[in-house]
Image 1 (cartoon, protein in one colour):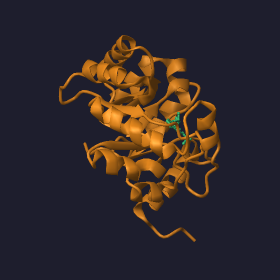
Image 2 (cartoon, protein in one colour):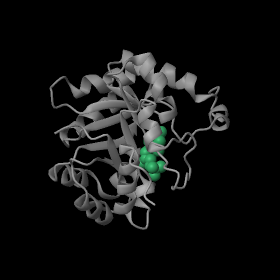
Image 3 (cartoon, helix red, strand yellow):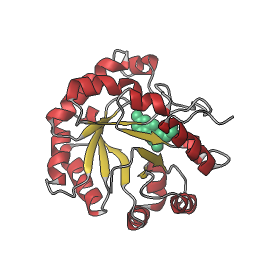
Image 4 (spheres, protein in one colour):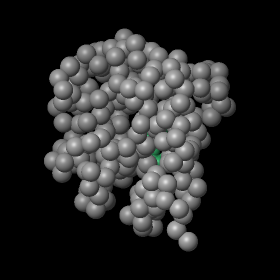
Length: 236
Ligand SMILES: O=c1ccn([C@@H]2O[C@H](COP(=O)(O)O)[C@@H](O)[C@H]2O)c(=O)[nH]1
């Protein structure tokens, strides 16, 4: 199966709506992301159900702990059969190396990505936590650190996808949340970009949650987003 560019974030409080949406989608159309809200509510069983339906599952738990603990968490994630798992690059090289080693080198191991700077951060909120903005500098540095630790790619804003490609090369993944078509609310996201612009800037994967999951008609919203990605003229 080819690797779908679109990753739908199943940020729901329980399994029902997540599985209902999964049943209306297809593994050829998108991968699915399970984050903290759904995982804390439903646990590994839900992940196994999605994997069992043939989906590539991105387990987005953003591990950030001492190296030994993160390595163990990655091993547990791999046992669930997920396609991608992630850590916070701010955990440092040693932690990322431990995560990568824990996943082994088999062909079917999960991909490992590292979150650089959360897409909700602005220059002001970065300053608050002691990181001098703009985000680009920190993203570039953390992406280099992640690549040095043999991580497969980073999670960053699509605004920074180009600079990550320039720094780390085309094979290094750029997984980009904060995707906002013009018709969708920004919510708590700060460093956003539209879907077509994100691809043009060098994103390899687009993570989309609320613009689809909170839409009155999620399937219609997804069609609209896919049309934008294909470059179809806007429907009149
Ligand atoms: O920097 C980051 C890292 C992860 N996320 C996650 O992506 C989705 C985005 O959902 P939207 O509803 O489209 O905003 C969400 O699950 C986040 O936890 C991120 O947004 N930014």
